[in-house]
Amino acid sequence: MTIRGALRRLLGRDDLPAGFAGPLGADENVLGSAVLTGGGHVVVTSLGLWLGDRRLGWHLVSRASWQNGAITLVEAREVDVAGGAVLIEDLPVRRLRLASPGRVPEVVHTRVTASIRSRHHRELPGGGAWFVQRKVPGRDGIVLQVRADPGTDAAAVRQVAADVARALRPA
Image (tube, rainbow, N blue to C red; front, side, top):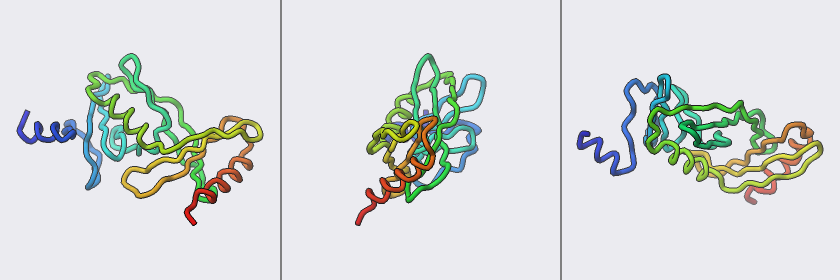
């Protein structure tokens, strides 16, 4: 290991894996990386999780867990805005098998958990919705995300999301 590499590790920053193609932001620090079984890599940074050449911000990771050598990841997609609340839906579960995980599972868990400021579930017609306030990496402030349960009345979700967003807005 080089002196530069040792210093980066001492500061809690890892080097980029060979072949990494993502354009890191000026204030984006590499916190860990791992090789995927079957090729490719995952890079964990202060701003998100790089999957190939695409960064997934921590605020868009609905769930992440580590089990049996794989990270199970649920990514959220922003679908609409209602009164300042961001309506999201979960994409299908992805399993990322890591050949040598290193610190990646621990850092992913820490970052996803740290992005959540509050969460609660509210019953609505036809089901309910999760209301989650999250910190968006690299930006000031908090965003309100609303994820409806399957079968929940979409109009009710939009109305309540807008009402909650307005109530949370500073006067």
